[in-house]
Image 1 (tube, rainbow, N blue to C red):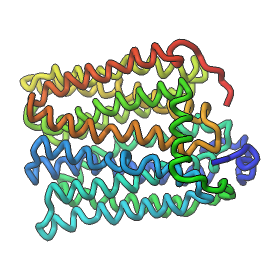
Image 2 (cartoon, rainbow, N blue to C red):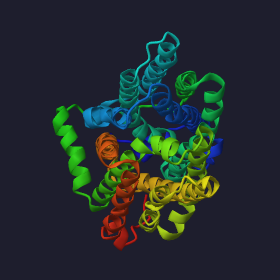
Image 3 (spheres, rainbow, N blue to C red):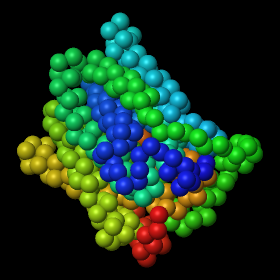
Length: 425
């Protein structure tokens, strides 16, 4: 897909206007805040529903984790090729949010009439995951229509801060809603958030006047995206690092909820606070990333961030249930630090991808990264659930710590770790 500087300049907002005063960017950011906050509620409420109300086993929890990411493996590459063929991305984004709202609304309905099961949750996660794949494929190039080129790193930081803000607000709100309405009915708020997001996106006015090139065949176009990533050392290093991180993160997440509830004996409300601490750290990381990148370069920030990736895993694996408050404090601090590192990495990840990718390939390069980085969540979730059954819960946390530590040499020995890239945008 080709978004030139001339296309960007056609936006009604001049490039000198701060992002906070640009109406379309505010609408896009508000849509993500609303949707991701609802998603953060479900991030706690769905596994709580499965583990506490439906008695899900570790293997079922692994399958639930995997179901949300399986669509990235099944449809991720195709979604990117389709995104680069679209002349307008917003209608697709709106339709995806509406489909997710309908899917999430079925959970409280099924619980209310007494038919909710773990397979139902797994199927819902798959549907929402499919909509997410398509939405992300369309939204990445759509950002270049809304935001001028010289403000994209700042805009990416704002978008990534949304995930952290949702992590701060969502778990606390989720804990309150679970207490008031039970976990299945708390999920209804996520359905509403998807609808609100769809209406906000509908209000964006930036013209989408892109004329895509004639289709050359789905697999030919997909291969171009794959070749763009594998042939660029920086993009190749980022994609591999993201895959390593997410594989072991999914294994960790597959067992952490059961581990926290049964072995550490943490109350559900306190687990929500720990999720919120990670989000606070992420907000700090997203806010600091543009300044750090401006001073040291994105490459240096990426390399230093990986040093902190294993911290939260190690703290969780060494936690003692006998010292509830000390354990909680250590987990909270490690969550803050790890959240800051991961979000700083994520902002610079996206900035480097935009910097290194030709405009006409952005949808496919983003989809290739998404296919790889998000797709491995399926394998990681299944592996975590299986290892939890075979080895126990705590060993899975240690495996996760060792696994994410591999990102340190991966980035430091790559071109990203050896040299500072030019600051051209």
